[in-house]
Length: 619
Image 1 (cartoon, rainbow, N blue to C red):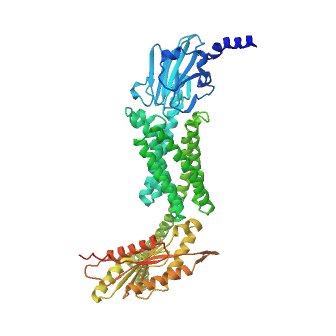
Image 2 (image 1 turned 180 degrees about the vertical axis):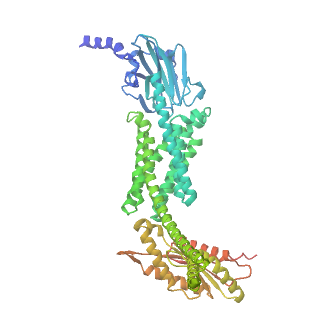
Image 3 (image 1 turned 180 degrees about the horizontal axis):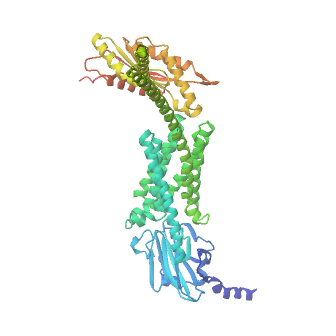
């Protein structure tokens, strides 16, 4: 037994030596991780001379293809023995897959020359102008060489190294630049596309999504090493802090987008409170990234991402269960990005091996998410375009009818000019009849232009014209005048839940219910969308409020029945009445009534509020 122990002690130095890694030129990268040995330096004060004198037993095999040691501030020394078995010299590149390493020193690449690089060292110190750490070296025919690498970082101590010939590296770089160009090009297209829709529709969800994609693009630009190469090659402190800052910034706009797309504002107030807490946490992480300890900001950004993933999954599931249609596509697209992001974060801890898949997991997930959201947004645009085509077809039909009438008139005039006296009176009568029909058609078109095609009510143009006349008459007679601004509550939910055809039927139903209670000299118009306006002559504030309550109760108590569906509706109404003075104008009436309407919405909807001017404080 004693002899066996002595034999093992004699063999320990031999077993401690790393196996020599033979290098042969090929298109496939070589992963040197399993051939490496590592020694951890907790204080980070050892130099190359003391490391070379370490006993063989101090070195431990890496046994991982990515040489990952999780989040640790230790300095890690890696030893690698290389051999060129071929008869010709070969130029090699040792490519470090983690561009966020703070410092990386390499010994043995080029004689006594030391490679010193990392994202906490000026970019110009790198031997190769590359976003990642690329270490070039040459091996002569039959040469053996020992390399020592020292890495230390406040982030993930993940080397993810690969060896490839210079020619294979060039081919690899061309493919990667093409893929990265396509990726960032797709993100840029999505930013421009959604910003354009926001400018046209003023829907803030498109703005939040554009800002999310922009901040996520910045995050990826930093993570992949492009930012240090092209944006701030000498701003090392900011570069280190920009990683958790951009992550929290993307999370901030992602929360706003989620809150809007899932329509959480109209649901239980707990949704909004949780979103506000997450937004506050995002701002706190951004503040820590700018002025606090880097490690705290980094851990905070990961914790924030995990919290958003959990609550996002809960919110989406609950809204899906509520029958909210956008929740299905949102759940599918958003889960792709969140799962990929969590996959990338976990790989940084060393729990799973780092690879090209983990390095680009967020890019893959974000592209899948972009495709799914683009389909949803495209369907929405398609519905709008279809409605526009129907309206254009109606205009073209009217124009065609007018051209036919004009052609008939020209034909009659040509026959009259032919000198056929026997038929002069007959053709003259026909011409007069045609002109009369054309005049009536023009009058009908003019009258149609004053009405809303869907509800049959007067449109906003008539409101502007008639309100001026009614206001002038009220000023002359010194009689009160009232304006009602009415809005169907949560009408977007009706369209989302039942479709636009049912929504149109609900608008027609509400318009008819309100029209039945109007007096002959009152004016009821469709103001736009689900908004209506009414002008009441000789009506005081109390009278206007009474009528508004009748309208509100009537609409609430008579659901819209359409194709076996009973759709309940409710009205929020703003009232403004006064005896107009000489300086009172139309805009003032509409503006004050609109303020009262917004007060009704803010106070819970399905109610009537009147505008009361603020009284000046007594001196």
